[in-house]
Amino acid sequence: MRKAKVKKIVLSGYGSFLGMEKGCFIVRDKHDKVQKYPLFEEEIGEVVLKTGNMVSVGALASLGFWEVDTLILTRRGEPVATLKSLEYDSHAKIIVNVSWLTCCLCRSFILKLKPTDLTEKN
Image (spheres, rainbow, N blue to C red):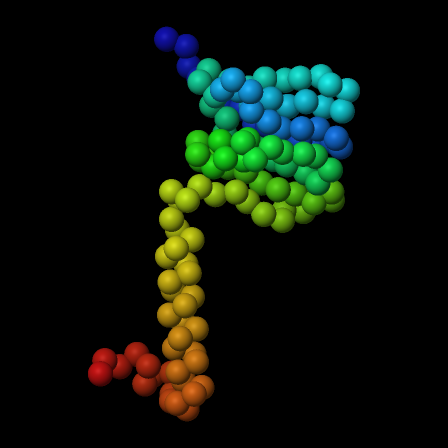
């Protein structure tokens, strides 16, 4: 049995395009040279997209569906955003914790209570 290879797709130049075609990610550079990455033959582990390149919404949806780590960088290589699947729910836990903390801080300012008063059970 052949072991699947983990691939990393990087669009670091200028004028490249990442899209989907017949179950494959395709990367087309500015000279129309095409590279294909079949989803079922090779595991795509990470995609890095740098400013100056284009991505289809279909490719973004597939990256999210297959839970492929996707990093978006500025022209200088500084990270700006990541793409996460909705199945990856740790962001929901963080939002709940931040909301609870914000609520407690607002209550302490509004009611002028000590922070220890907020931790006591009523």
